[in-house]
Amino acid sequence: MKAILRWLLWYPLLLALIALAAAQFWYFVHIWHWSNHSPENTAFMRARLEILREDDPKARLTYSWVPYHRISGQLKRAVVSSEDARFMSHRGLDWEAIHKAHERNVREGEIVRGASTITQQLAKNLFLSGERTWWRKAQEAVIALMLETVLTKRRILEIYLNVIEWGDGVYGAEAAARYHFGTPAANLTPGQAARLAAMVPSPRSYSPGRDTAYLQRRSATILSEMDYAQVP
Image (cartoon, rainbow, N blue to C red; front, side, top):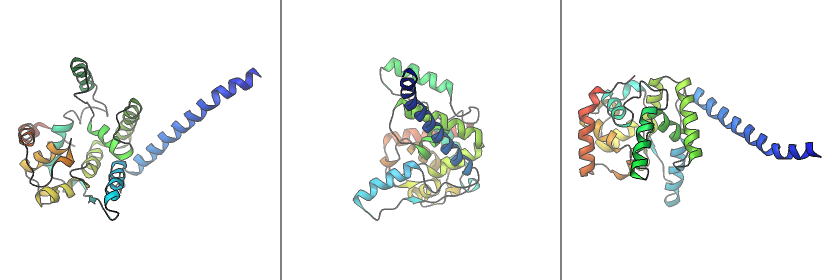
């Protein structure tokens, strides 16, 4: 009888562990596949399209994949400078940035600063939701480590620049460059690249030609720092 009770207690935990392991394997297989194939969409894209189609059943996303060499080096440096200055030196998680963010958040008494690397942002965009829970952050960290293990820095940045949002329903550097500036991603100027990088944290706030004092200040800061960014 005691053995049966113990089994009944452990059985749900065993099932949960099996499900967790299966999920991690599913993530890993997809990442391995994307080492040589381009993602057709992401979790963020699918979620946004579903919302857009609530108002317009025929709504479509603006998304066009371009290879790494067809993305302006200016944009690569601008985004790395803005989003993850130590991209080339960390292995998915930037512990120094995490420590500084934690100290500031404790000091302010609320979450005022994050520490997500480009790899973590890519993990979230590819597979997860935008909710802020400890479980989602933990899974994001695990996927980030998988990405860094399977993919090169160049491939991580290539996928990232091709899938992040740069306008409502606008995804990837090529679509963004044409949407905001009417030019291919390969032809972006330093100023245009800095401006796009400044939009990354809040992409739906900026339609083509829209300007704000914050966007001007942030773009100028990125423009002054981007030449020092290391990119693959």
